[in-house]
Figure 1: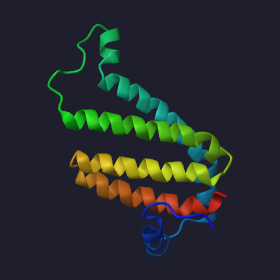
Figure 2: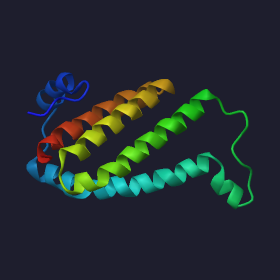
Figure 3: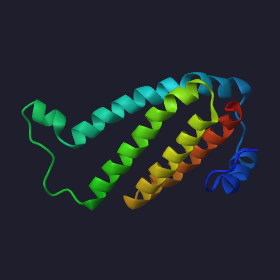
Figure 4: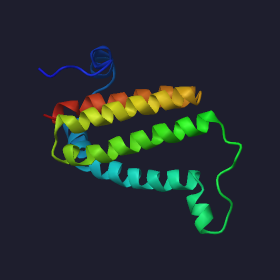
Length: 144
């Protein structure tokens, strides 16, 4: 048996026993097409980060990023970059149904939750965590 990731042992019984299970067809759909959705959303996220830095606005002759942006903005951008890199790194292993891809999604979800906490986005933290871990634990069995 593979070693458990941080908090995986504690979260597993919650999201596998207390939440309703997905049907096999839903799991198969998520595993088959999920990597492509993640890839598309990651590319869109890259454009979003460029816009946040004012790159798109500078190209269009508009103003650049505001000077008054605070610490939370830069932390959110840094964690967003880390998350996007993890999503992009996960694409090939997810397509090949390797556990390494699932592990990267798990870590990306944890980084995203930390980002929500730092930004004091409690609603995003709770809803993102519940839905994210529910989906991840439902499809985990499909990755060897």
